[in-house]
Length: 201
Ligand code: ADP
Image 1: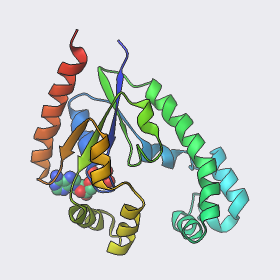
Image 2 (image 1 turned 90 degrees about the horizontal axis):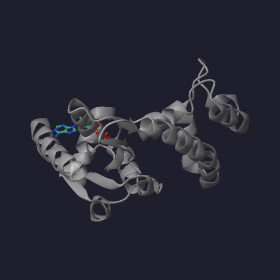
Image 3 (image 1 turned 45 degrees about the vertical axis):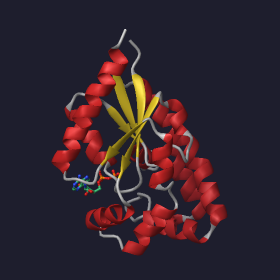
Image 4 (image 1 turned 90 degrees about the vertical axis):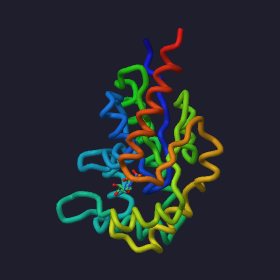
């Protein structure tokens, strides 16, 4: 039987990685788009070579890895450079994602993606799930996790779909306002629902 691909989305700090691990405990495989985005700019990858050729050596750290904060600085100041970067990285990410997706097994598997709708990758998925948390809680959780300033996190939140818009587009919503035990219960219930839905003859 073909594996059904389900998109798991939510803004930064909404709990996607936490939820994906809870699904994994139930035997569900997932591919995380953030990890794939990091993979394509690892040393030795064609994307990193092109970024180096385009921006020059200051875009690399002394160990040859991408200097993410230097890159963020450049593209934050210059939308054309952002567009160029995305024209290089987005196709590579998509290609690599598709390869990972092909290898997923089970009744269903998850594509974990913060920008599932923004990048149109929801079209790869048969169903979609969104994590939903109030923006203020997202902000607190990200500041605690990444030690970023509130202003930096606000900027990222502003570049993503609002929770309201995202939730209006998905098939299932996981509210993540409680503690991690609460989320675990909700993931278990949704998993049972999906298994029933997908194994119905
Ligand atoms: P995302 O992958 O969507 O960016 P994470 O899963 O990394 O979000 O969650 C953001 C932060 O909030 C992490 O530090 C995580 O441990 C914490 N977190 C997630 N869900 C909960 C929860 N229900 N209760 C408390 N902390 C949580």
